[in-house]
Length: 297
Image (cartoon, rainbow, N blue to C red; front, side):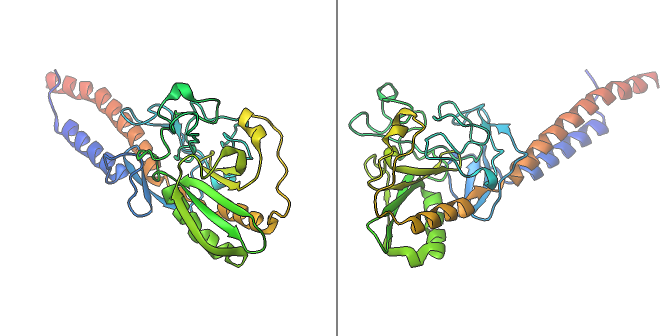
């Protein structure tokens, strides 16, 4: 056994300081924990803001002991926000529908659709009727979901009967409501109403556009995009009299202001981990030489 020289002790202390500094104040809480405008990812609090651009260079795995451990997270940027009308779109570099087994390029989970008549919003995985109604990501009210339980917000047109609704985690919805009211208020009628998603106040057949790896969806009441329920590639016709100006405003506002996480702390942590490994290897290489010299003396 090697004699613990001052160099070894100092090295260990230095490494621990690096790790603590990079990690910041890690928090052992559920991924959904929200502290102000912050979400917890791998135990690290990440600031969330409509002005963040994302981190293209980050692509790490979820640490053991957490939901979806070993799946990849990070790598998505605002340039990758837009998907299509198909569930499973909005994932950078992916074009096939569905969300089964996928990673989280923006750290957020995809929305979880449910139909009470088929199964109770995720209670029974075997009851899912197709790729849309999966229990993989739990119930819509799942408290472990990053950003909080799934929530809907309704926006009514001032010039027509068009009613649009956004479906996403609670934190994202509240942020987007503020952005929409700022950008689209001349086009809106009445107040914006919110409600927990219960399987009946939003459906995939009404989906017009997905964003942020299908973790946000813009839908239109009375829109019939039922071909998407079978992963079809066709796009249904919008109802007569649809307020297209409001649709355009909502679509651009979501794309420009949907909250993204600042993953700087995670990037620093990954760098620190590599530095720790480097110094540990260095110490293990240098220590035998030092002890050999001590023995010769």
